[in-house]
Amino acid sequence: MINFSKPENARLINRLKVINALRQTEGLSRAQLARELGINKVSMGEIVQSLVDEGVISEGTKQQVQVGRPGTMLSLNGEHACVIGVDIGTRVVTITLYSLFAEALRMERYPSGEFKSETDYHDAIDRAVKKFVSISPAPVIGMCIAMNATIEGGGRIVSSFIEPLDDNDTFIHLFDDYPFPVILSPALICAAEAERFYFQTTLENMLFINWGEHLSSALILKDRILPSMNFAHIPMAHRNLCHCGSVGCLETIASGFGLRQESERETGSAMSGRDMIRDEERFSPFLMKACEAIAKALVFAIASTGAGAILIGGGLSNLPDKYFAYMLDTFTSSASVPFKDVPIYRSYYKEKGTVQGAGLKALEEFFFRRNLLLKLEDEN
Image (cartoon, rainbow, N blue to C red; front, side, top):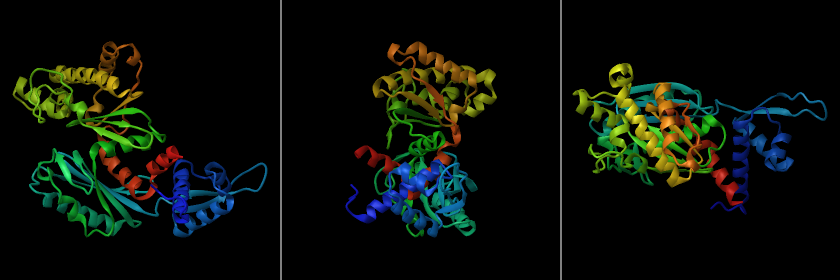
């Protein structure tokens, strides 16, 4: 808990409020910020001047006003700092340099099929990071590494679909010599952060489904994201062994992992979702079956969480419209009356959610701290 009796803590929170207000609305003046944030004009003047001196915000032209003294328009300086986002996928490692505006300034990708150890992953990331730091237009203030994993405090990877990093508590320490902090984050959390940024408003009480190579879900609340792996393991069939040890989980039918299993058993060829779309005439029944299973699982998920809306992201959310429409129809026909009208949206980022989300998670953790402000707002 932050002690607001300490002036330095109050100043820190007010600085964050100003930064986040300008992130949402550029061109506000000192007076407008003071009114909007409930900070007296003297304190606001001191905060803004400090941020201008540090290069965090920039002063623009005078506002055009009909009455009263025109104020100077203020905006965030996107070149003040940069962050690095890393997405460790099952086949590719993507490393991206981002500005404060979450603009990708540089990107490197490395196929990971031949990576056999944590050192292989570290060395690939390290090559890109050293290159980015040398060309970055601003200091790098932090890095977030996203992966499909369960991660404990301190960066211990409890379980991961990336075999060399599974049950690993040393990977994070390979980055200890970096001059900026490095965190590990579940891919699910990063993808959900990306959706928050796109909507530019708080996604409250929304169920987020990350539908890709594997399935996961999270409940997005006002000030936090509650992850859960249970969605992937809703029982949906009487065959197919899941990696969790159970039989017939949703994961074995609807995820990319499940689609490969299904296609290999039925046709002798292990096909990815993308491959099935390319050969749609042959594999449309597999994709329809996956959509039907997702829809029926969503009925259970909504009933158990009470979420007010559903947002579907991940690579398989990029299926052609007819499959998404079929999923919506199946959900509506399967849900009971209280839940039939729960809206289902498709992600803006789709398969790019985790890549973008790793950068946004770094920006949240090391610069904006918007979730902290939302939490404090609720407590007060």
